Image (tube, rainbow, N blue to C red; front, side, top):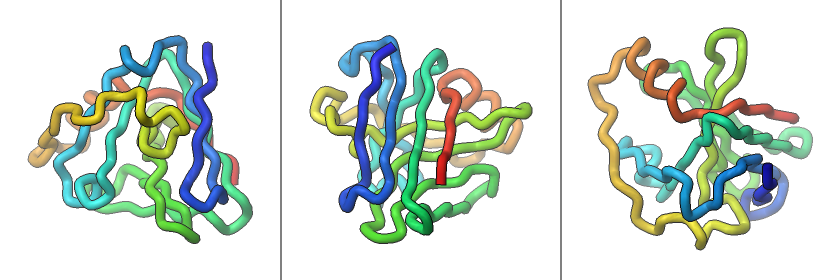
Length: 139
């Protein structure tokens, strides 16, 4: 496993992606929802990897919308979107916004845009179990 580090713009929230894959081989996508489009997000998950978000006290904001099952993680100071987490089957899974990683330029600059409108909770959870990874938040 290799660790790929990153952070929000001001450095108050750190992120580490743990993966055995090379960044160029990782499946990156763009969600078509208004939140992800407004943040210019490019996200990925490595089902066999993990992501850790470590925040200084009081610096992490969690935002929920849509189905209300996902916490979108943002820095309270600079507003950067770092990733998303969801509790599922007694564990937490998540994705990382590759734009927050130091190696962001090694990922696909224009991954495919996906439309998840119309997904119900069961469908969304099933899809995410295929691609999202173990996630830890230390705040």
